[in-house]
Amino acid sequence: MSQPNQFSHLPPATFGFITVVEVPSLGHCGGLLIVSNIGRPIEFHFTTPVSSNRAEEIMYGKTYPGFLYGDKIGAALVDKAKQLPTVLVTDCPDILPVCELIDAPLLLALEPEGSADKPNNGQPFDGRGLKHFEVHGETVYCLNASADELDAIEHHASQFRKQLPFEEPFERIRQAIFEANQVLRSA
Image 1 (cartoon, rainbow, N blue to C red):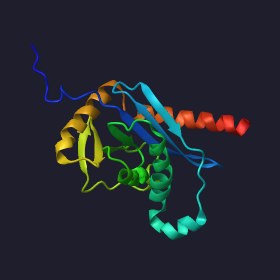
Image 2 (tube, one colour):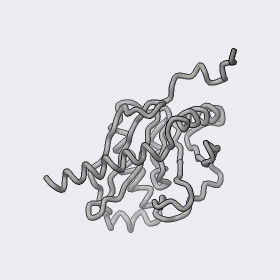
Image 3 (cartoon, one colour):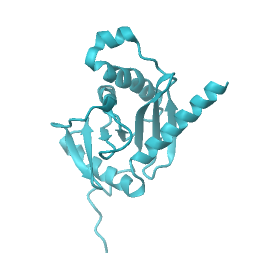
């Protein structure tokens, strides 16, 4: 008879996948897909395209991408959610400032080196000093979590990754944003 693990008493986790996509000639669109622990959709929200603002770029300087992605787009998406997920996951380092607006742990799951998409505006991500763990061979960085919560978050992330790679929900978001903008353009 198998022994229950230390996490068997925890309710199933929900995961919120949040990212920002640049839509040529329109601007930046954000998407938030909240899924069950096996990847089934619970909620989906996206923003209309947000154009860069030159005055804000000047005022915010190097912190502008974090302001645009985290404060403007990420905050709007989190505000729309009816249910805050157990864990929020992003593939975009520039959206990390959203962690100041939420109580849930935020995971940064970057695509493996050499992928076509360049997160963080093409800059390499420096995760020194951040809590992190390995999930199926990938390093996942964690913000907004205490040391006590980290083991449970790692467990939930590992269980989810047995069902789906983290990249898959992000691809759903990108496709939905692309589809919505195609409809807007043709209207």
